[in-house]
Image (tube, rainbow, N blue to C red; front, side, top):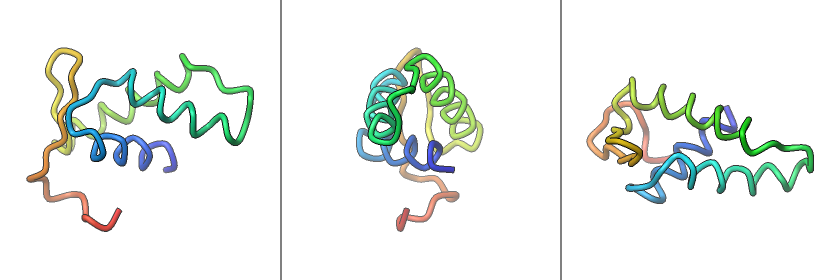
Length: 79
């Protein structure tokens, strides 16, 4: 849940971004809790979360760019 929410917050903060940028931001968050965090593992989980958000049409992907869909019905603005 923490990862999914973090991915969504990063996408909302940067409406046009890439998965690598999001993974780097989340990696910095995780490094506060543990030194044993692997970038590739975080990147895989970020892409998993992005695929779910894409399937729910919360984001859209074009090539390696990720766009936040502000017209979605699934996400409350209070996140």
